Image (cartoon, rainbow over all chains, first blue to last red; front, side, top):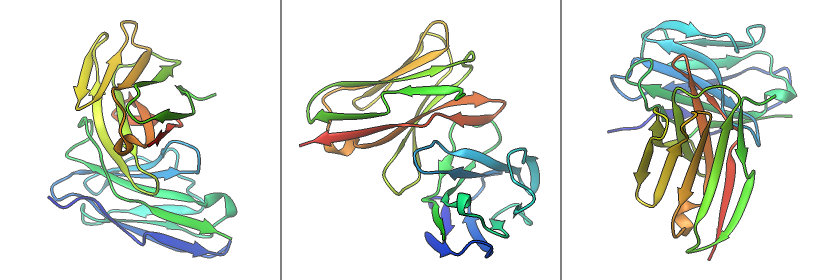
Length: 114
Length: 109
């Protein structure tokens, strides 16, 4: 079974630039999560999708971050404009359904903002 | 303040030695996850505990949720280089996971 795919793996941008990350979850998984993991911290949930609907985006900085999952499969997370404090690893995870005991994580995208 | 506190923050052990990592919550735990993260990679699910006193094992890793359901421990027996990485505990909060900061484990050959 193919795992959660993410691209790119690494991205370096300057502050005020825009960046987008892509995630393709495990086939058949209805729930998709985006996490932000700052160096030395645990992952923090940014947004949770159930199919193509948003379940929770309470911790998403909506003035600069946006995410979509238009067809209920793959998803993109965008930052516009980026700030220095956005430097982090952005992890995508999926689960069969909301509340399923196991989330499957992708390898992450490491973003460096200069 | 952090809802989940993990201790120690980092740990260096000789290969073959046993070790324990603790996770303490400021709130009652209704579900507690243990994940492992290799440096520069995503998280790998180890196990989930839900009932007070529950204990689960996977290969040489054993985790337990205490009776009062506010603390969990993860124990590794006869550690190996493959056990090196970051161990994260996570609390189930309304079908979402709140993670601790992690414990960094280094194994010396």
